[in-house]
Structures are given as C-alpha cells and as structure tokens.
Image 1 (cartoon, one colour):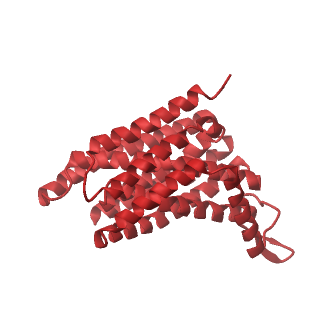
Image 2: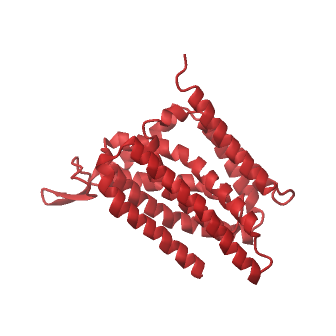
Image 3: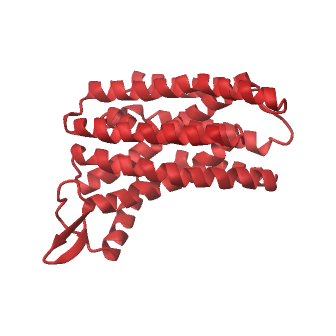
Length: 311
C-alpha cells in the first residue's frame, strides 16, 4: 500500500510540475524544447526501472513467490514500449481534432494536460478491472487476444474514411451542447448574452478523453499479455501517458513522416495477441518479447526516415 501511495503522489507531482512550469512556456514551444521534454520523460521512465528493481528485490525477501527483480524490470520496460508504440495512432487523432477546431498551440497544452489527468484516472480503473477479470476468468485472455488481433488487421486496412469519425462525433456534440464560436482564451466555459455556453476547447477535451478511452480498450489488453502484475501494468502505462503531451508537440509536424510506424504497431499487436491466445500453453521468454517489440519500433522508424523524401 505504501508503494502505491508513494507512486501516485510521485505521478501527481510530475503533473503539477508539468502544469505550473511547462504550461507557462507553452506559448514559446519550439521543436528543440519539445525534443528535450520528450527525452526527459523517456529518461524518467527509464530510471524508474531501477525503482522497480528495488521494489521487487524488497518484496522477494518477504514473499519468495513474487516476481524476480530482473523479470519485473523486463516486464516494465516491455510494457512501457508497448504503450508508447500504441500511442502513435492516438497522436494522429489528436492532431486531427485540434486541426478541426483550429485550436492554437498555446491552448493545446491545457487540453492535453486535462486529457492526461483523465486518462490516468480512467486507465487506472480499466487496469484494475482487466487484472481482476484475468484472475477470476482465465478464459478472458482468449477474448482479449481475439480483440487485439481484430484491432491489428482493422488498423492495417483502414482507409482515409476513418478520419470522418471525429467529424461525425464533433457534430453530435455540437447538437448536445450550446457551443460558443469564441475560444475565449483558454476557458472551457463562457457567457454570451447572459447564457452559459461551452467553448470549442471543451468539446475538443471531450473528444480527446473519449479517444483515449477507445485506445485504452486496445492498449490495456496488450500490456496484460506481458504481465498481470498490477503495479507494473499501472506504472508502465502512466509513464507512457505522461510523456504523450511532449511527444505530441515534438512529432506534431512530423507525424506523416513516420507513416511506416503503423506496420510496427501492427506487428506488435499481432505478437501480443498471440501471447494472450497461447498464454495457457506457452510462455514467451521476457527477453524475446522485449527484443521483438524494440526491433519492430526501430525498423518502423528507420524505414520511415529512409522513405520520408521519396524520389
């Protein structure tokens, strides 16, 4: 319990730092600054693996049946890479949502901050439910595996018409809410002619939150294929979510250049779905899972960079 409380406090502290310090610099965001921020988040996530090793070293003394520290670290890093890779599609949708509302960069930071805060809460609940289901219903792994396999092939064959979905949902929200045409700075609510209305920023926030929930339906089962240890699942997920804001701003103008990453994500989804479908018959070594995921991401990045300027 102490470990969980300390970790939650640590995560909330990072969020406060992000809001108080980094939000002030949101107006003057540069590619260099966002690159540094992205590197910092990745470094913090990497250094936390040392904390994971220490936590499971201590727990192994009191309970020999717990995960070995080295195995725990491998599962944590693998889970973090999975969540990070599955966030790529999420970034594309975020960019599409911001563009549809013509939201300036200085206002995007606030939306992403609250979006991440909501993601932490909702994903925490989904992780708890997912771990509980797997422990109570062993056959649920087949359902999760099938879901991921379907998601992988759906992602591979989807066409440009999928981009119409955010617009359809946007139109639905505009019918349900009184939406002002004025962004009114960074406010979510405003008053016009004595009537309280929501701003386009509020509608964009709802779309960001629901988009993350939809992606979480895929990403949570994916990481549960690596481990059902709740602390590893939660911590790796949280660090991937925390780094999503800076990664978005870093890749905002380069998303199209990494179009081949979708094949990396496809390969990763197929792999973790096979892990879930065969989990009761065969256990993939931790080093193999980490190597496969790392190599898939590396190949996707390299191929994208090599073909960014086709002749």
